[in-house]
Length: 187
Image (cartoon, rainbow, N blue to C red; front, side, top):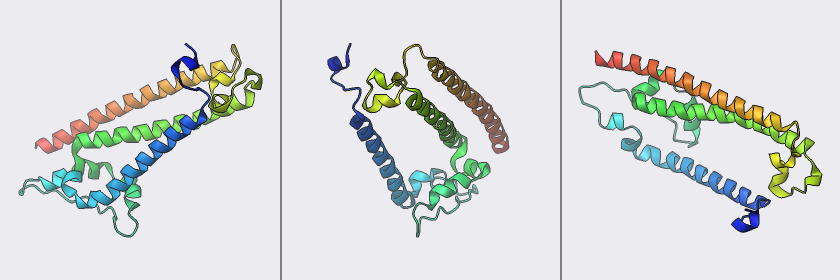
């Protein structure tokens, strides 16, 4: 099936850029929405405090500085301790946030490696293949049968092995945190 059969031009960089900017706009909008709505709806963002038992002692979370600069909460979010997070959001919320942190670490590492692979594609790519637009920055820029294709294969295996290792380590951390949390809260 050729690209004309699908109606999609594979060399159209504008499609990629429009999707990129659309997703960046949505992400920015979500962060701004949370920044302005978060302090006004505490029952949604700190339900353990809003629905706590009157006899139970639950400390309030640290102030996230929604005042002068509304985005200081992002820096504070990365400096909060494990114990504080467990106290405010519980084990499930803590592990949900840890999963996002794992994704941030993994995709940061993979992005750096992908930029190196992109540089290889651009530097050693064959201009005679006729790739234009976005395709000139992809693996299709390499000549078929090139030894550089094995670099991409090796990178894919390394990325997968790294992800499996990080997930395995996170799973064992989850078991340990859950065991400690429930042992201390059952007494």
